[in-house]
Image (cartoon, rainbow, N blue to C red):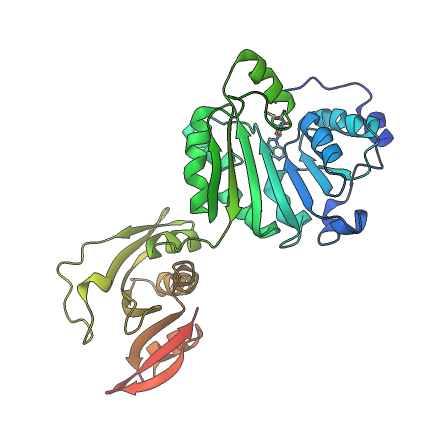
Length: 346
Ligand SMILES: C[S@@+](CC[C@H](N)C(=O)[O-])C[C@H]1O[C@@H](n2cnc3c(N)ncnc32)[C@H](O)[C@@H]1O
């Protein structure tokens, strides 16, 4: 939202000092002290000029309402609106949604609103959309289990794209509508919404409820743990020499390559072997020791994100290879022929 710089911005903001939280990081984990006994904490991202903020907070005096906006010129109007209404349950943060977890503790927020966020239509800017999976995963950090994200937008392509983002970040979708006001005005409207409604633009809305995170494929987990690398699944048809009782369907062969410069590793694992929930490392090879170490380190969070609870590897009972795995938290589980099976929990 582009806005003209308003004159007297600072004095106007200072006049709303009672609603303006200047040190939001200092309030992390303590927001409810502002309103002891508050039933819920509602948090609005990108509140703009605050029509929705003021009306929703007024309708729910039992709840504490925090509105975040990164453009002070817009936020000051929102604060003035709330002050004029005499609201005592609303507070404002002059900040960025990307830094939410620095201002709120885990589970501190019950309900989060995203209304008419900037659509960033170019694919190369997709990560800036406030409903991008990465943002949704950040909101998870502060939202309690079962907490909701309520999202509204006039932008249909953004909406359709967002519907795919919510489940990837562990939010179950409900109340999905592509024409919220089809049966007449519904709920509190935002400033933007009112304009679009008058123009006859349909409003899209959905609710995402925080549930468990979906299990990530190992390749994706590794790519996340190694953001400067690329992970690619390779053909497994020529793989031989598997441990006894291993099935080819359990096999996963991955090539990890550094995006810039030389380096990489190749990994062969068996998923759910020898028991469900365990990843068996058949081999991990790399030309450079540092690449092999980086890949082994990334394997732990990747397996955890994939829903696996343990990693196992077979190696000589002592020597360099044994030390390599032991220094990564693996411990001897049982002797195995001339070697040993090592395990670490994820
Ligand atoms: C299109 S406006 C919508 C304003 C209001 N929600 C409404 O519906 O009328 C989007 C608002 O989100 C704010 N915004 C965008 N990205 C933000 C971010 N990362 N953190 C905080 N505010 C953000 C913008 O400054 C702008 O005020």
